[in-house]
Amino acid sequence: MPGRQLVARELAEIFKVIAHPDRIRMIEELRTGEKDVNTLAETLDLPGARVSQHLSLMRAHRLVEERRDGRHHFYHLIQPEIADWIVDGLDFVEGRLSGVSKSSITQARRLWTASAKAANS
Amino acid sequence: MPGRQLVARELAEIFKVIAHPDRIRMIEELRTGEKDVNTLAETLDLPGARVSQHLSLMRAHRLVEERRDGRHHFYHLIQPEIADWIVDGLDFVEGRLSGVSKSSITQARRLWTASAKAANS
DNA sequence: TGCATATCTGCAAGAATATGCAGATAAGCG
DNA sequence: CGCTTATCTGCATATTCTTGCAGATATGCA
Image 1 (cartoon, each protein chain N blue to C red):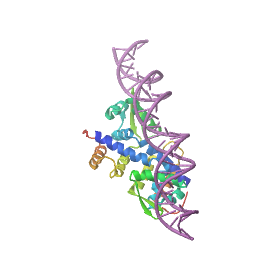
Image 2: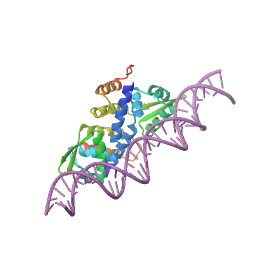
Image 3: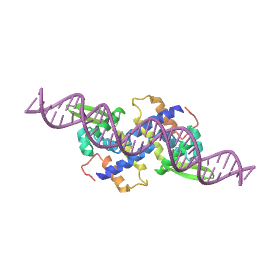
Image 4: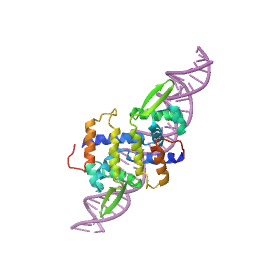
């Protein structure tokens, strides 16, 4: 049984890394390909330093990888499928007590799943 | 875009609830059906009070539900599919830096996925 | 070289979690 | 009722995260 304990610990690690709204949005931003730090910061409306910190955490856990080009650092998901897996987790958000309507979940699922159109909502 | 922010926050909540080795093991224990607090505590080798705390958190987030029968409190997963989804996350554990071998992951996946045989490892 | 842009790192303060333990409830039994 | 078993709740402490901000670095360009 220690095997399962170890694996559970590793799984928990991954969950912890993902368990932050900013990081989830970042991963979904990266689902369609690499982006540089500044673009992420602007798109998500977050201070650059914060984005950098999140990226460094995700890098440490090998969720993302960096590619440098001049003064730009481009990041991409090592396993892009993780973005889909996270969205699958929405199945367990619906029906919870809090204030998120079913429709906005469906919408978010579409927006994230569809290979990124323009529209904002 | 605020829609996506809200949804990301909710998703992060769920991830946070799951992001604990004990709770992951509890969820996997419950995949095959309800169990009472004491059984969980013994199976997972955890103090009863701790198990109770975890359950209370998961109850608050509507991951589990309680059924009382005399002095026993039986808990079950509201959406049992969550157990599978969590195991799917193992795809993103492999290839990380830490000390968990590929084989123990495969094994854990089998042990959790297979509708619970006897064997411990 | 000097300056602006892009990104990272370090640190301090505050917030949120985890954990162990003691004591409260509640049901079952003699 | 008094005792035991099963489970929960409250509290204090330790640990871990989050966040903002102030410098470092590094690259590109004049």
